[in-house]
Image 1 (cartoon, rainbow, N blue to C red):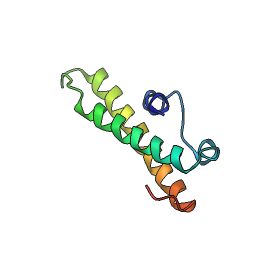
Image 2: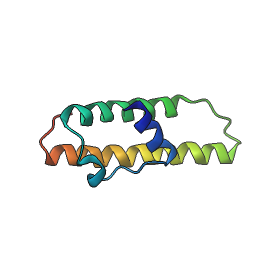
Image 3: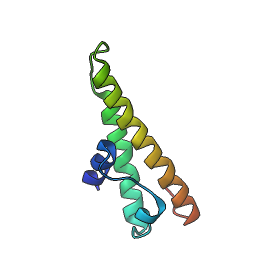
Image 4: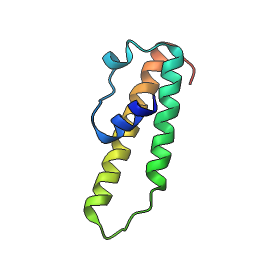
Length: 83
């Protein structure tokens, strides 16, 4: 699941309800934890604030991870999966 979280952050995989349909309860929880860890790791990266391209890439990664977590939370709530 860590690889999926990294792929989501890089934009190779998009998380949507159809993508999550084949996941069971444990896989959903594990993906949520790995997305959270990837978001924390992305936030903790040290960057030069004058490098606009790097800042933009970091913010896009954070945005993708955040959107994936929102979709995952809503899908888990619909399926009554506690995260």
